[in-house]
Image (cartoon, rainbow, N blue to C red; front, side, top):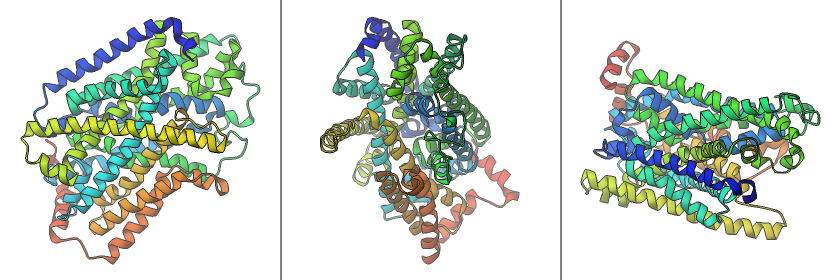
Length: 533
């Protein structure tokens, strides 16, 4: 696909350099405000509403939003609005039912910086088993998520500049790791705001421009679509959507509940009073982004019909965003539109890298012991080093997956590629982490009787069920195609409840901490005031 952009590569390269220079500049400025591990991991818990909102929402998006969602709408129609509805609902519920209590609880639990650390202190687990297990599972899913971002970045560099996948992966990793390494959480949060605004500008501009391009016949190319193309109750095959489809859409929202890079934003917000505005801003931003991503896919049909490329584009829907960027816009604008893809990759991958480095530093047994023997400055540098290590592991995983894909292609005589696996990797990483940590987080915040054994059961059950579900496909009514977070939640919650009720009650110190964070209603205003600063 190099020929698509070949003559304009220098324009696009110039825009890319300006974009990365802005990211590095933000990181350098924010690095001067970093004084310790709390600043590196949570920005010192002094992040305002706008930054919290856009950082959490943009890190909840990925290359899936820019490349996959428009392609789904382009190929199948408006039925994918259910996925958008599930995601937006999850964002709103996460801020509403988790953010305030989690921020308050992590402060009370000896200033916990990560969710695994919070779990250990929430249940007074002196064995370290819960924290270690949660840490390993988090890093496992993070590596899969980073891998999906590296695939997207390498695919873009291959398409635009003709770079090999190996070099594309290396360049993407270096780009993401560089500003995250320099500036930590504050840099990631501020660059996420910059990237969120860039994504917003590009995804709103493109469909509006395409509508005007096809203004003479805005319905051109739509006559051959199925009856279900404009019907949100009918899928691409013309069949009515069933309960499993709705459950799958809900899974995308449930994944938000356990997404630790998002949960970090809840913990980092400046005060409890900032949570509601953060929720509202973040929810509105996502509604706009997802709505215009869907509209882009729909508007692509008449626009591509106008230039006679609809049939060829339908043969490869995944490339529709790149195709539209090249055909209808000036090279300078094309460069800006392509940076939206990069921004979607970066705003997710940077948060994942930072999360993994924080957990590797503070929550892994051997490293934790070494980390706490270091000075505050030394712990920050250890976190930076581990950030690089995690990124390299994710890149190596792609090498293994590439070999597996080649083997399966030869064995099954099917075209199985890494590029086609972005949606699958995102679904697993998002749904798996949601299932592993969503139920346990909610029950930890709201159930006084909840104990160590219940928490352990919830994490293990959610992880196993989501992983098994992701490995299957088909089934009656598409049962095995449900987003993994949904079955993970449905199995983890009852399993945790049963185990909790069959095992001893939590200790007095655990109950006392719960009551301190969740006092009777008459005392909550006083408690909120003590923990807001």
